Length: 322
Ligand code: ADP
Ligand code: TRP
Image (cartoon, rainbow, N blue to C red; front, side, top):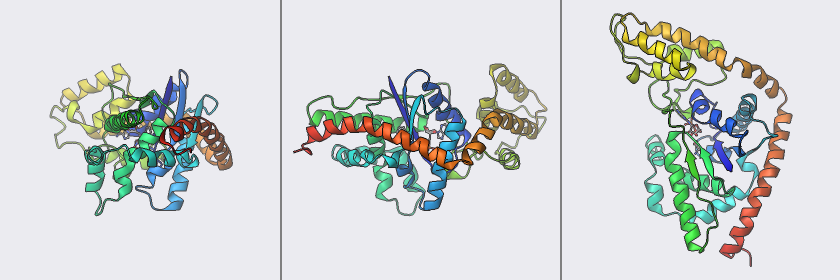
């Protein structure tokens, strides 16, 4: 089975990315043919500073490698290093209805945050469909917010297959962890690199403390009973607890006397310890950026070999080969 997913280097990776996607992704390398890539072309929709994008790309690669992604087991590369992604995108544009893109929640959401939304944002799901279809992926592990993008990918694949009278593309399935709700940011909205509300995976302890202390909670007094199910802090804290730990915290919420400040202090320590083993590995990797580049270049060669098999078929079917 082929499993594939990507992440944007549009900022530093955060715990929402980790629990929503990276952790399960890395697990797949043990039991599937895993394709994992950094989608720098997608990040161009929001990052317009070249140096920032380049630095974020290397850092995202270091994050994945430090967290356990093994380039000996998975194909790991940077999207922009494989030109077939763009070629297939153009071809798929012609099988993507305007209405489909107009219904995109993520486009509406992003457009509402900008003065003038550009075409890259509108066409974003087509590039994502190309990413997936190019490798004939069966399964795409993503967070809940990407569900509609996967549905769009299936629609586009179906339209292409129908137009050319044959099953050229595999229709992929989204793999969404049913037990995981979208991780809220410190302000209670979805945690996102671009909303300024994230708790990054790799930050200094002082930064971590500042972020965690800034998690917005309700105004209930210490002596009041609290509601774990509507509390951001609880939603974040439970990620770092086992079942028993979560039950214990829930009970403390339901008894008078809980101080949010105490839960926050405990959370700082938990997050810090949770990522401790990976922190050193990441520092070492970032000290050898050329090694990271070599790993990515080797990954791009492997990815390209797979992508070109699909493109041969697509060029044949569409008449681009004459
Ligand atoms: P961001 O919104 O931070 O830019 P991306 O859109 O690059 O994140 O998402 C990368 C992956 O992480 C996707 O699979 C997405 O579903 C997942 N993800 C992002 N934010 C969250 C979150 N807050 N909770 C759970 N999963 C998330
Ligand atoms: N749109 C995805 C996100 O924001 C990133 C992405 C791009 C992706 N191409 C992909 C995810 C292909 C899975 C498969 O998270």
